[in-house]
Length: 307
Length: 198
Ligand code: SF4
Ligand code: SF4
Image 1: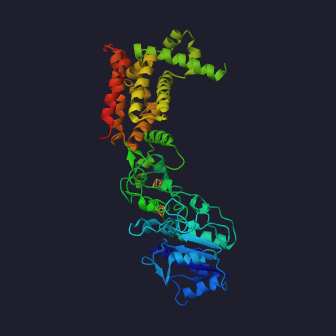
Image 2: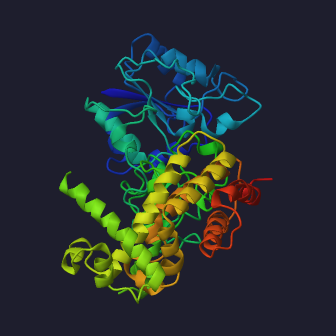
Image 3: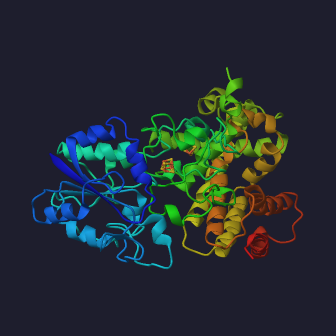
């Protein structure tokens, strides 16, 4: 049986909460296939020290090392037994077949790394955009992959379980420039958003929570420039932020905690400073101008009043 | 000469003549036969180039817009300060106005005065998209670089285009004492001072 060990650094436990919500496969299905060696929130009897010793003594083969939370060497901020989280990662890094960083903190440092009093907080292989995490930029695990990064604040459980299952069945996965699995992160929340028609015709919502209107121009939606399949793999299989009328706040990107004014689109002379990925500003302005001039009757009405 | 290029050349000739007649006699008083006659071509042949007077009227606007739009695009792509860009913009606009007075006349006397002609497919900014887009890009970049004061797009837009239109209008009315280009520096300075940050 393949084995999995879950460690936590500086974390709010959000990705673990997410994991508990996993469906298809459910958490117990996963851990009937994979031996869960230890999880700080789920294990009662297993002793982490013993498990680590056995891994180091090669009594246990470690397949998946999962890290949730940001990394620090400073034990005043994060101490597990007598170790810091960085001690534990360093001990196990060459033993694991795969290391998967779950959540924006383990990947980029995220919110903990913004803290000014402790400057050594980072992700496993990145600190924000730079490859200045705990492990060297050219680090690879035994399998030949670098740390496989699953960003999100928190992650969607299916993003993790799909990647885990792919690796479990020895499938090859390709990674993007932040070492995120392409299959998951090649999509944008904008892809599949129910508000696409409003985006197309530049009909903009002024308030949260309404069924009509796109949230891009007034409310800061980052859906068109964030990598995440939130409108393809729905949350709780039901909905997503943008479907519910809340803008995407770009929680899967390295700059998530350092951006300002999440609910406001930065504009210069009324033109958004950041525009959807893949279009030039010239093209964006042109097409918006045309769309605004040529009205679409349907999107200018309340949905209940349409035919 | 390839056929397509030949056709474009002829279209341009038609544009120039139509522009002049429309501006002189008014849009409604000018007929397709008038334009054909002035060009020395048959009415039937003219219809090969434009299916209707309205189509010709719209084409003239699109043509003028891309002429000016291309020039502004070149300025936008230059690596110079916002202030220098304004100065170049004013100069290029004046140059085009001097080289193609009929286009300016047409804009002022036909496009702005007969809006109903331009309602189907030429409303709003549709026929002048290139110019509007390039001006918007210029303004956005100016704010992003911290050179221009952030404000509503339309107030900024008319602050750039209004003075230019006004000056060529006065020129058309023969009110100006000097040549257009002699006003360029002062006008550019006015636009810059009106838009700059701080
Ligand atoms: S709400 Fe956001 S994700 Fe949805 S269409 Fe608008 S910009 Fe795209
Ligand atoms: S919609 Fe945006 S903010 Fe929300 S979970 Fe997806 S990527 Fe994160």
